[in-house]
Length: 223
Image (cartoon, rainbow, N blue to C red; front, side, top):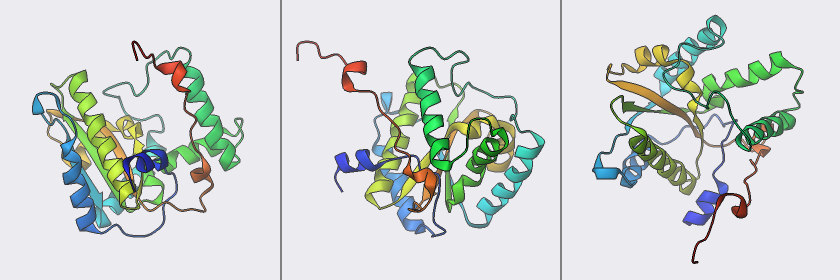
């Protein structure tokens, strides 16, 4: 698989097979991804990969947490701006409607939508989870480094025949995750990621999120 194919086929997968990922493979991917660009070579990413019995423990914890605190804990950052303006608001609305359309869940069925959202915290059945934390003293340029590292991870997963779902929803439960991961106080959780082999029969996996045409977001000056 070349880079173009990996980019074209990378999607947020919301249904995984019960098939283990070879431990050496995920170790190699996590290591290779560190060739991501990093301003000043700070390499601000801190990565924890969870599987096996510890992942089962986390899933059990989260089954109860989403019942006890369905709206999450006090957040440490906004996943989305508090007031989304156009066109970002419409894009977010559309991808949600497209997803629930594939699942056959109408907008008025709030309970079913909450139930589907809660599947995030079971990693959609994936056998591996990856978490990325960052030193609180880092700023937006270093957070962009985190994104480039994570993109490397996702493309390397595709090269290896694996899939993923980046999940910023984990930022809704920062205290629970701090305790579970043993994160030191100077670091905060940025995101989680479900990793495994996509279930080809999962209805949610039929979703291919729309992308704006290049004319909408790019200008070519003198080119």
